[in-house]
Length: 102
Image (cartoon, rainbow, N blue to C red; front, side, top):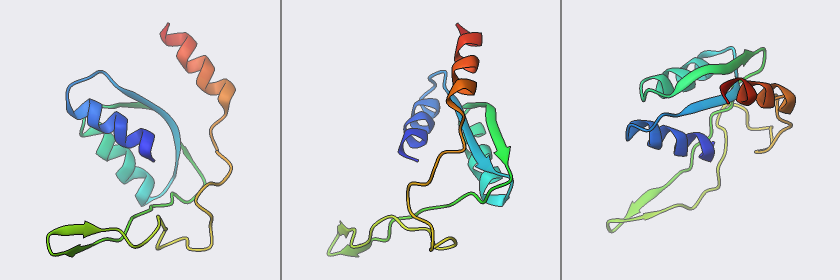
């Protein structure tokens, strides 16, 4: 997700960062968590759920040293799913986590 890319970049630059979210209890979910941990992002409040973590990529090619992006975001593994599905994150749980930190 774009928001997690922003958090990862802030963590990489030494800012104190945290992610509250849900990933699947699968390899892609564990890779996502490990990637954030490696950047010193606090991942203690990422829930592992019994869902598949979708991994999206954008295809591009180099055309005379200019990157071109002819494709839209798509998941090579879960092609049948739309980009935005209902969130597995429960808003009240997020609010409780934030209130504990204040």
